[in-house]
Length: 255
Image 1 (tube, one colour):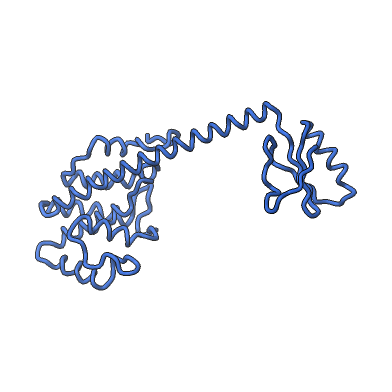
Image 2 (cartoon, rainbow, N blue to C red):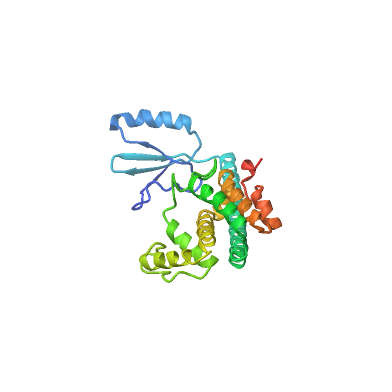
């Protein structure tokens, strides 16, 4: 048995070659019985004991087999963490590229849609934004804490930016921006187009890299892409793969 004097703040740190500790903080006369029972459970030579105030911390010495098993678990965890980081990086790169494709296409084509296309897209997207899908509850039930900022960023990427982008807290619905939004909406023949831009900005605010790793969240992206496709948006091969579950965890693949 090795008795250590614990350094300040390190009484719980696990010594090399040991497992997690058990503690005793009962009556002094019960310590011998507790120690005898503890040694039956942990017979390996060389346990480490620390005493702090009235508490005994007993760390069992691990056998060679236990150490090998622990090292294998640690190695497997490191591999899994590396794979998870790689998957996260892939999703982030994909969503960045896909968002640019969507934003640029909508910006370039927003003035070319006819009345029928706009009415159909606005009806679909209004219901989608407000009531969501089976996998997403929509704005009636919930919204992100940073929703206004994300909508403002997306709207400004879709069309001529609003006058106030940053003023302390970034806010879409400040007086100057609302005045400009209303002015644009009141231009003859522009109301449906402006509604489409606001709805698309809201959808862009909902979708991020994490969307593609969740089977339920993908339903909102699928519905959004369907509306864009109806407007003529050419869905890329990479986007189609993502919509079919390319970036889902292996145990949660889309059906």
